[in-house]
Amino acid sequence: MSRYTGPNNKLFRNFGVKDLSNRKLTSSMRTTASGQHGATRKKPSDYALQLKEKQKIRLTYLVSEKQFAKYYENASRRTGVTGTIMLQILESRLDNVLFRAGFAITRKQARQIVNHAHILVNGKKVDVPSYILKAGDVVTVRESSKGFIKSVIESIDLALNFAWINVDKDNLQITYDRVPNREEMDPEFKEQLVIEYYSK
Image (cartoon, rainbow, N blue to C red; front, side):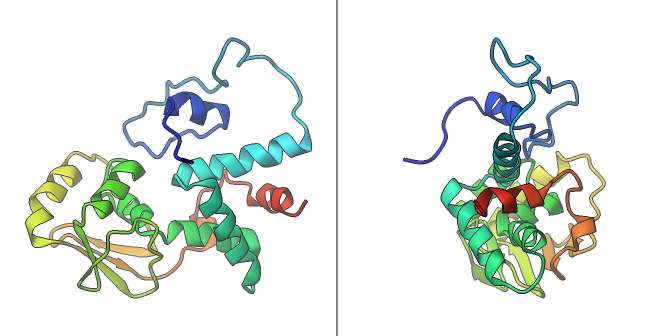
């Protein structure tokens, strides 16, 4: 089974993922790799840098190796900048949009919310976290699940404002207006290294 079940914090630290998809983490988390020799300074190879960046992006969005490779292949077949398209696909995932909108504390929780059939897309039940939203799609919460989602939203003390989604927290509705532009996504991602990794 490809699912990782080990200690997440150590894994994420090794690849330099800062937020770990978790709003509750504090900025005091150690930035060196885990283990006895985690703080050892050594110059990484080009391949090591490419692999680390691939793992960093993959772990941020919590997708498997197989899924991530498929997203890259999909992006490479489209017209445009492959790296940007790949990030746009990841940002368009249903679980990520719920997380961005503040309907979940972590991406893991967003995935669980979708898996447990709390979410409707255009009025139809969707229980697949990797479902890719299209411009104009409307995400709502099942009537029986609204109390739970409201309690989650109230526990998130963040001012969320993403230009590509319209969030109506009173009615628990998200409208996915468009895919984000590159400058609206994480500036720390170096997707060109991912392209180099898969181009070998």
